[in-house]
Image 1: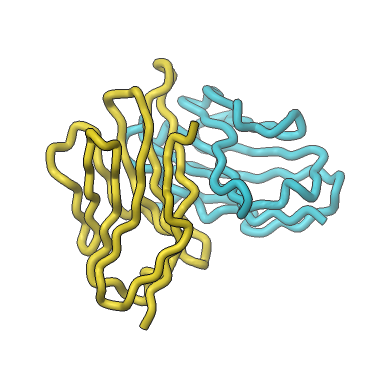
Image 2: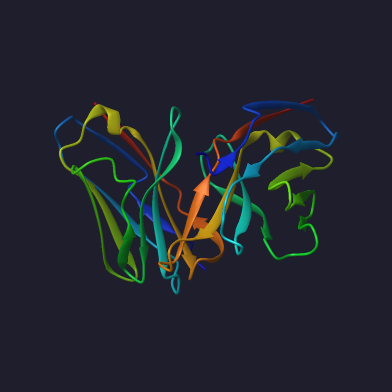
Length: 117
Length: 113
């Protein structure tokens, strides 16, 4: 079973508009972390935002916010005021513990965002 | 602060040759991950080290792949013999005790002809 699901292979958004990228996850670990990474065409993986499973408030980092709905196991990324430079691949990832042997990071398939001028 | 350093950035080799990818994690980080990224399969975890010890290598495709971490500041991923289907971007990433985020290297673009 997929641990991280991103149902939107591609998304388009008009410059200056807000966009939501969907992510759902599956874990039985009560202590986990959720991440979003951006991969521009240059290929590097850029950390955007983090949400811990016990965090009461949704995480925010500048124009990025994470809409965390724990009961629904949802961790959507919201980008406000989109910019042309936001065009990239976006990955949702989860860190969970593994059998007392540390932890595992698993990534979703990604959503390709294109910002239109 | 230097980030995760991978070498080489690009590697082109012929089928059957041995390939060695290198990674230097961020100083103080004790968890190291090797990922492979392809269009078809996305980001796949190959192997994970904790305190230099391989914890989970279930993602290693087959015996042609091997990884080592002889000390806290160096890891290698070796493919021997290489095949065209191994062509991919290989990322190394590190974290501190699994807390917080993964820091990625720039990746190695491997092309096996």
